[in-house]
Length: 166
Length: 378
Image (tube, rainbow over all chains, first blue to last red; front, side):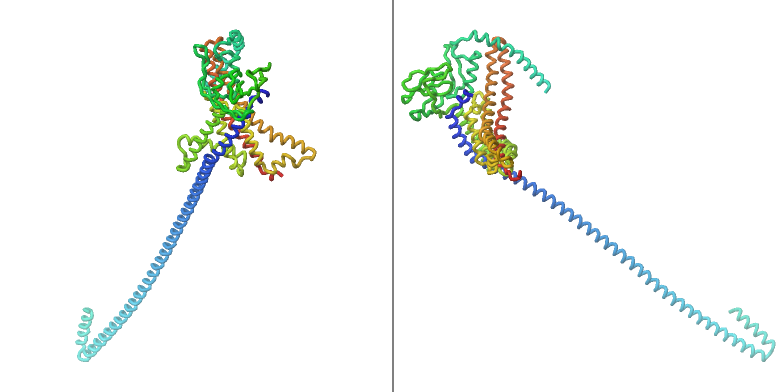
């Protein structure tokens, strides 16, 4: 302990104190302050950049989600439109078919009616012709009967021949 | 790794085997001790004296010394200015005037005052005395110490390392003006700065206050570390092994945490709340002694003792070259000395960092305790 105290140099202590105070002051002013400030600046810069990147990533994600949503909506709309169009088409076809059916039905009916009509008219004509023919024959027969019996028979035979020929 | 372990084991066993021979060697050296060998350092006693001399501060910057063929001791180095505050005021001269004498035989006369250098201390001789007389415990009886503000080797070390630190870190600071990431040597320094800030200052002082003290902690950390490392170079600085320097550093820390201590820090020390009133004065004495004496004392002694011990061990191992020369031969002693001092120097490199870290960490811890907000504990 005594040698230790003997080794202690007050002069060196004073000189060291002065030098250390100067060194600390100079180091703080010229080295540590600017260094620590720059380091902090850099660190906060890095932190900000990281945060910005994270934000950008999130925004991108949102954007993508939006896009997807839009696409989905568009697809749904398209599907709905297609469906509607199909329905309309089907309906139109059905209507057209119905109309066509109606029209043909009407035509057929008309045709049938006219056929019926024609048929009846023809029948009436035939009836009329037959009646006239019968009357004519009857008239001629009656006329011949009066002259001779023989002639009458011949006439009938002749008439009948005609009739068969007809 | 296995080979390395084997090698270390091998060397350790050799060392243990050889150290049993040390006593023989010492005895035989003693018998051959020759006082007139031109100041060569080659006996156990001379080595011891040399080591003790080395770990002290020195007024010369000597790089090495040798004895020429004529038996004269030659010192290579350069003198440093001596600045004294004496009974007659300020006196300055160069240390070369002592001619490397360290036992008080060379007397330097300035302004009618006579000075001698004994064991690296400068004494002023009493009036009308022409020679120093010593008592039986080898203390000068007719001379007294003077206040010595000389630019000693330690002061040169502090100045050198101070300029080095200023140069390095101001360059790093300037680099940030032009670029975001420093280049070259500054890139090595930057992570160290971040390390001290994030591993020492921030966790020990707390997020709220650490900014104020980081400058001091950084300076102290790099100051101690680089000085410790410079002590391992052949320049042989032993700045952080000087009590005056470590005391100065410890007192800085003491002043900083005492000045910045919060009201509740001082209240807890002087009048501890929550304990019986009778015990409070006793606690106050213990707390005050802890804060004002024990904490700085532990700081200054730890650093001083570790670095001095490191120097002593390294130099002792180097001295094996001389002390074991007779028992091992020149090659054996030199080889053993080189191997052992190599490994212990590696450990010293680690210690250099460790002591800087511990000093800074404890300073930060003490400051943190002083500025901490106690409110949440009650």
